[in-house]
Length: 281
Image 1 (cartoon, rainbow, N blue to C red):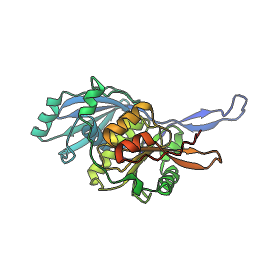
Image 2 (image 1 turned 90 degrees about the vertical axis):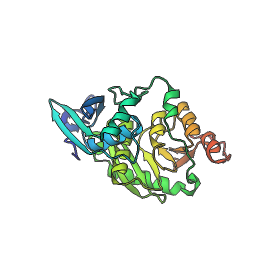
Image 3 (image 1 turned 135 degrees about the vertical axis):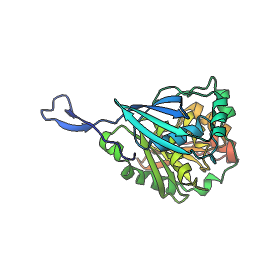
Image 4 (image 1 turned 120 degrees about the horizontal axis):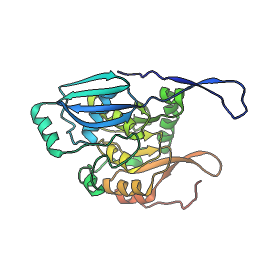
């Protein structure tokens, strides 16, 4: 399953408009993730690339090792709901079952079934990364400029998020979309796992940066995570904890789009202490 059909509604643009146009509505459906016959979670997600979503969630949320490949993934649907049947080797399924992890049905951000942030921290990778300063602002801006043309679901609905893997020079390698930003990132990570995780590059997302995106991005070798909107305080805390620098884009006083470097996250991760002190808004 690759591209999902987009339903349309008749809408009027503006209160006093006399004409109607067709408006794409982003699909959102319950996705039952079943592992060796046991339902592990029900997610609310856009029902495309569900094999990628399953791989990503198994890896970033349920603790399946990146080197562990499912024996099979099968997708079935009925009455607007989807069932993703994942078959693992018995030993792998037993290790997953021993974790006792389950997730909430939610397309928004959340703790994803963990009882405390400390629990999430204990299972989030933290490792040295290639210096993000070897990625230029021009490369990040070029990636964001290219992303728009690679968001067909957002173009049709105006309400889908995208996650993309980029080379260090800013070329987009792979994109996934979803109604939920963390689902989009899980789909992307799942696709990267399926095709072979790149050794180097960075991540960009069309959304704001929240802590769970950093948790998921830490399962990749990304040099940095750049998002369209700025991070939250919790996201910056997680950036320091996981040693994954975060950046965003914003317009400066001359209305030019610039990359925003968050010094508190950068200095903690790679010893960089520069700060211009200028206000961007």
